[in-house]
Length: 278
Image (cartoon, rainbow, N blue to C red):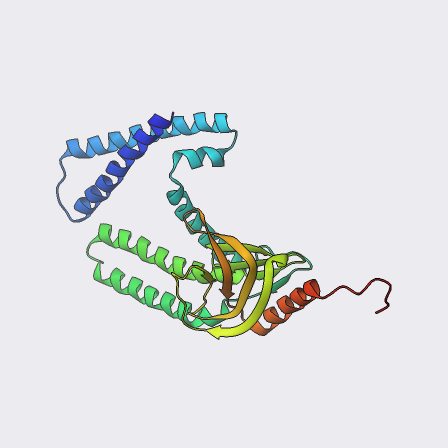
């Protein structure tokens, strides 16, 4: 089974770029021999049939469609697709004014306000580019349709990034600090791992510095959290990296700092001596 999966992936890595090249040639008006088009469609159909069969066998063996898909498709591809789906889902939740992961009794701290102007401006520029390209490509219907789909998706992607930041606020629970950044960072830090908290504005961050994680919004962080011991922060494409300092941003950074400081002081306050009334 593993050999068949590796063979399918090798064929797909060659076939998919070839399909893109054929599509570009067709859009450009280059005449493609019918035999070449038929061969490409046949290879695609064979890959689909074999892939569906392998997926069903893995599903029966693993008992889970998610695990079966994880064995069939490379993990980086799954992570990228999952991120895109989360962005589109966040866009729908944003329109519905809903938030993710905030339960009764939890404290939510938004962190999207300072990037709103930038993201709206970027989305407006993408929208203007969409209109301009539609006008310029009006005489090439196929090219116009392809570019229009890509441009509209770009606008939705930008809005989805901002929407994901809105619907995924930082959350402080009774025992965990839940830090987010759009739809690609989801970090749960136990409160007993927090050594100290500082309210400080930082506008320059060294992304390569070991032991530090910077969740900047609009190139700034406003709360610095030092941990008692290294914490494994997940990476986008899998794996983890140990961090001792986490910097994040919040719309009301002073409130987040105040709440975390209260929790930290309460946890480290000395216990009263036995036999004495306090």
